[in-house]
Amino acid sequence: MAIRQIDKLDFKDKRILLRLELNVPLKDGKVQDTTRIEQALPTVKFLLKGGASVIIVAHAGRPNGNVVEELRLTEIAKEMEKLLGHKIKKLDEAIGKKVEKEIEKMKPGEIIMLENIRFYPEEEANDIKFSKTLASYADYFVMDAFGTTHRAHASTHGVAEYIPAYAGILVSKEIHALSPLLEQPRRPITLVLGGAKIWSKIGIIKNFIAKADHILLGGGIANTFLYAQGHYVGESLFEKDKVDIAREIMLDCEKNHDQLHLPEDVIVADEMSDDAKTLNVPVTDIEGDAKIFDIGPRTAEKYAQIIKNSQTIFWNGPMGLYEHPPFKKGSETIAKAMAETYGTAIVGGGDSVDCIKRCGYKREDFTHISTGGGASLEFLAGTMLPGIEPLLK
Image 1: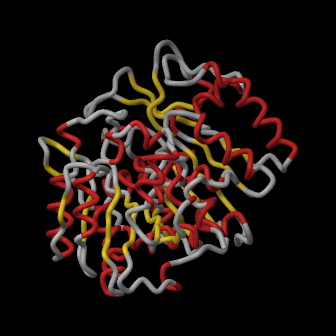
Image 2: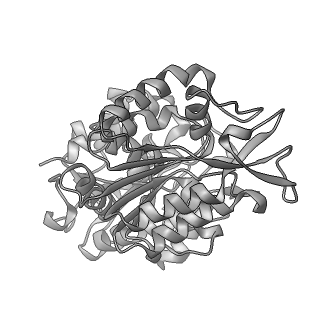
Image 3: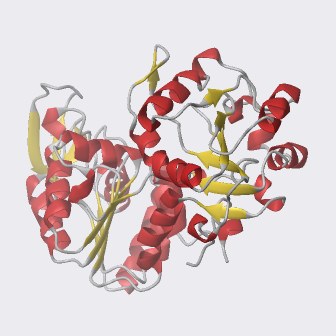
């Protein structure tokens, strides 16, 4: 996919409206994880080096168009300033006369961070007037918040209607890593999909039925498919209203070489805890009110072998409740196989990223770790994302 990138842009003495993904975990007003801030730094440094003045637009949490004091970006700005080693002027508003005055005074090499853009209901409404106001602050718009590219908001899509839009370093890296899966991936191709809900994975499964050699399912998603297949799943988490969709997908997969794989054995327990008593059983032997909390060792090893024999692998969603040690083994086996494969190994989704961290692996152990779970799923489902469309050449 060909996009306009900032390395092709002369932004000396220009003002850049830079959309970043700074939605980091906050506790008591303090930043708990700086990963997303660190990922934003290369683009900011590149723009500063080129002589631009930078106006940062970002959000935190879900304030739903209201001012929520604990979701102000003040502490995030302080943390970014420390990591960047460069002064950042944080404003208490995102639009208005005060903002305009501060921007008018900006000199090359200066940075302003606007207040949480989602404090304004016009942001998520992709309001035209609001988009025009944001666009009026700058000469160019740079999109570097891949995790928000599937949102048609004012700061991700609307502003690009009024000033030229370019992809930042992070967004360019994401598109460069994910596009080959849709265009000319090396075979065999394997999707590993887990997590609780099926709805976010339907698009990617349907798009890859005719492309993937293997689709490996775990987590709550697998439970829904097992139920649709006729298995008793006890008190396990599954989506009864998605059973028909699961059956439809299974039929489509049967027509395409039967590449859908479901757990053959599972880890069950009566409760979800760090010291739960577990039992490994075949999926045909689940009884009573047992709950499935992980894929079993036989399934995990089968999945791992498929991964090791694949040339392109995409993983989104854990295989079980990995936060609890008794239910971590399935995801741990997948993570190990992904890290050891000679193929292209891509991981997407916040839970998957957290999972590989807990399993002791680093970002560099994989080909690529996507910064946007929902965005990467929609991208690979073949959807044209609102935040990407304005960047196309």
